[in-house]
Length: 335
Image (cartoon, rainbow, N blue to C red; front, side):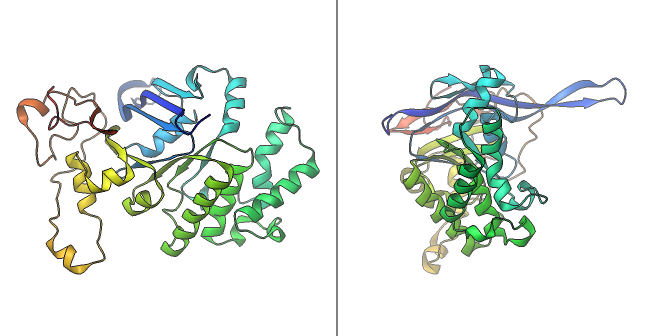
């Protein structure tokens, strides 16, 4: 596969969670529309950053792609195969190439398992099902190799998670994600729970591993500086939809969507003189509730450039505005 070929193609992905009422006879009275129809693709070897406010659907998107949640609708093509339509056996095989790094290393590591057994677990599971051919000694050697790769001493193999710092815990999570030699890693805010100095170490580690193993990342974060540092392309998410997609450089230099502009205006600039001259865009109101179907108004109530005649009752779809820069905004096209 060349670097221009698409590894992951997500089409009209939706993930709705039912709202139920009643104690004995429950009935569905609505849905939380966590992901409400998104489209994007990721090319082999690149890092797609997914950014947005807390609660916009970023983590749900990653879990739906990995089929940890069964999507309500849509298609998730990985190397040309729709993961949503695979049998359990075929999906298990496909998951060898799709691994996750979870946000909270304190919650994602089993406190009863040693670091070595946590990293070894994926290999043991697949070896037991005869999907990989590895002996126990080969698995042990692989675990020691991975620990060294992620910056942990192999002599820590029998230590438990509570004996590691936060950054070291996340390194264990990275080692576990690498165990089966995946092609795609879904990194769900892997540095948000860490100190700033440790964040840079983990980001540099992920960059080094990407170069060494030719990995592809979907990197989720709410920190725009982190996204700018690591991403090739960036998708901006709001209330379950994608507002804008562009190359990292283009997005930060020339944001098109009003929501993206507001997010970037809140990023601190280290130069006090520049910071004084910059105009901060303040979004009024709260993020609307995701519990109802919309015929418009995803961002209308908060948008400083809203056009009532266009935006109130129409939903702008993601379109290419210039080059490979896409935006979902009626400032650039008509309904």
